[in-house]
Image (cartoon, one colour):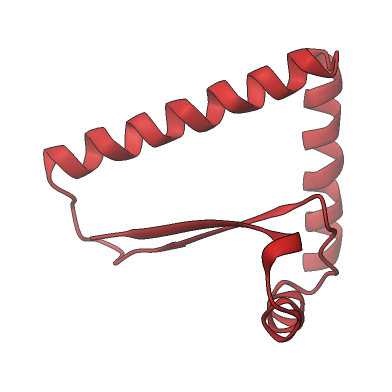
Length: 94
């Protein structure tokens, strides 16, 4: 069974935050959240677990959409931000 936790960076104790920053290779900002999932590769979850996961994903996507609408962020701006983030990650992996 998978385990998921989401924490506001501002709520994470200083020593744990430093450890996460070391693991991630970047400094965390106060307005960010950390999403951590633990799972067993190759293990197929049962139907109830899959439905619950799908519902959580749907809630997350709905919240992201509300956030974007409240702040006037267009789909194009969101796509550009994702592309920029992906390029940043790819350049760090090279």
